Length: 448
Image (tube, rainbow, N blue to C red):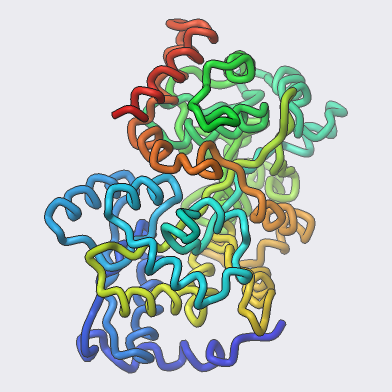
């Protein structure tokens, strides 16, 4: 692998110039708030300061409080210079006057539009430019127990019928749940899992004319399929934490999760025991016996749900300094940034004009884990690595490709879809009533 020349010496000198010595400074809000990740971001900031003389104040913000904090800062005209945030809020914040699309577009063109994966870039497209700059992302995965599937002679669960058949065959209480579906109405995770299945059945937020249209046979069918899956799930409100713990404890045959689970799954974290590994006396047993499905095929379509994170330059920013910081994060600091959690931070900028694949190649050499570090390929093999990377160009989401990102921001902020889904799962609504209510509530959000 060829490496950008500046990367070789950059990290040797990052601590030599304190931020206080900088001539001026900017503020960077980040939802990467874990202690080790914060330190890495501060290291990148010190390197940036050494190079430019511009200080960077890295401010951690809990993801669940991000919209509240941004709204308050906007009202007080005290926005940070740069915001690290998910696509869910990008176009909504642009419409609200929080983000500056001209600055983001200048960064993209200066770095080279062709150096980015086109899917993540297109999600933030706005009037010929870009609302924010894509920085990393992940594609949602269906995890399944390959060893149990092999014992029962079950095929890869990449289609609805296969998923449901396997959930029924492997459901064996009290030791094993056939499939753990997200059901907590207060969690974005529930929206993500349900939306993945809806997308896989050809359900989109709008019809071809751009009109919101969720009251469709496809959504009714998705609701009924989702309820069928919950027959093989634990009762109650299942969150991302429940499903992760049960899979790592060997109590779930299938779950849907992001690639961020890979380090816990591999047994590299002492604070997260993997019970099948302990039972077998073999570290990595569960990892080696887990299969991954990226694209799910439904009766009416197929899709992989993708989450992309962006660097947003705000309207209150020191524009020049903010653009330099964004460009630094996507060049000299990029592999260091991705290395914070390589399993869930895929490179949406593939390389530079001179080295078109240098960041993809560099990512493949990064290690993951907390207590112990290892390359993803060590536990999962290159086929899994290619599966994880392969979907970046074609991540799918409701609404963004048709310019409805502002509405999506409202849907995610209010959690209207998970709330109605939960009422349906609890038997308060029929599938047709739930689909009609989702359609009506989303249209009300659009009007409001």
